[in-house]
Amino acid sequence: MGEHRDDGVFRALADGSRRVLLDRLNQAGGQTLRELCAGLAMTRQSVSKHLAVLEDAGLVTTVRRGREKLHYLNAAPISDIAERWINRYHRQRVDALADLKKALEGPRMSKPEFVYTTYIRTTPERLWQALTEPAFTRQYWGITFDTDWRPGSVMTWRVDKDGTELADPEQVVLAAEPYTRLSYTWHTYSQAWAKAFDIDLDHLAKIVDEPRPRATFEIEPHGDHVKLTVVHDGFNPDSLVLPSLGDGWPQVIASLKSLLETGKPL
Image (tube, rainbow, N blue to C red; front, side, top):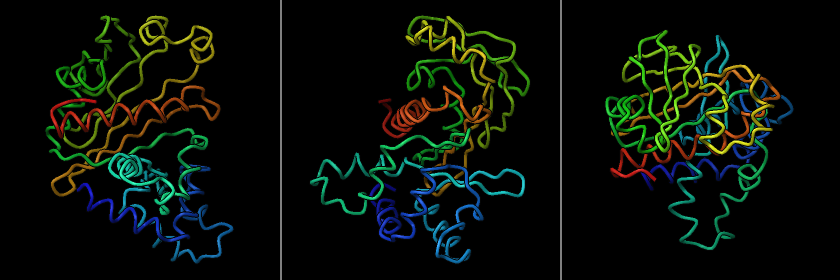
């Protein structure tokens, strides 16, 4: 994909109405078509067409909840463009990205849900291996999972750098559909976890009673690539954990992508 996908991103950003929609999704992720239409001088049909262009370019990703389709700003294509283009040209000349500068530097989405989509040049089978097998996860994530990957099975998380074990009967596999969908509850916010990742104990005390969220990985073939969507949800609206995902997941997924495409994690 590479620069061919960049063409679609730049075309999508060239339209002011689409940039307005991206700004609105940055302010509040997870909006429906009806919510996005509110207050705009555009017809529902026009907004729908603009969203389709943005989704095709990878700038918007969607999640279905019942009959509703929720829309989220997806920063992955912008990050890819930054890596390939920003360092080649004077930043002020990249006009198409100017309107997204505040979006990328602004506050995280307020809705209690994190959605991130990227495209990886690999196969669904290989990506499934990378998400589940210790030989892969320790390279790009620095952790491994001890589980048989059956729904309901307990998971023990191990931190590779020091061997810390994060064990809890509520750390379980929720869904495991090989090469299509993987979902599990998140790890316990324990003192062992805090010590392994240098988390301040005062911060730990504030988050230890937050509800346990879940991570879901949706895998879809897309030509010679695979579309990977990560959904991390189940948070309180005022969660102190949710804001950190905006930095953590993109780093993990970028390293996963690098490992599968080049043989080396970041």
